[in-house]
Each structure stands twice: as structure tokens, then as C-alpha cells.
Image (cartoon, rainbow, N blue to C red; front, side):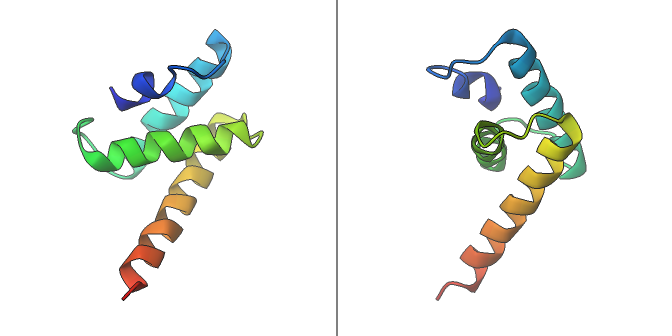
Length: 81
């Protein structure tokens, strides 16, 4: 699972890890990502941890903000020449 690998070197409590894991699962469901080896899952995990470190601790908000930011990042990449 890409999310567990990303916890290495990050000081998170078990409760914080649980919140991120719930939000990660919710984001993957919303994005219809089934294969956790999909490179997009790594992007979701990395961005979600970044969002969490900015202080977002609500599961639903963490999932939605991550999805929104990934969408914006993908749109920027798609528009780049």
C-alpha cells in the first residue's frame, strides 16, 4: 500500500495515521482507483500527507481537499506545452 510507505520518517500518532488511512480510502473510492499499485495512488498519498501536515485533520475534508488539489495539479500538467 503506497500510504504506509509514506509514513516512514513522519512523526504521526496512531490516531493521525488512522485518519489519513480513512481519508485515503475515501479518496480512492471517489476517484475509482482500485489498484493500489497505480502510480496515481502514490500521488494521492503524497498529496494527502502534505494536506494533513498543513493542519487538515477531518477525514472528509482531507479527502476532498486532496482530490481537488490533485485535479488542479493534473489540469496544470495537461495545459503545459
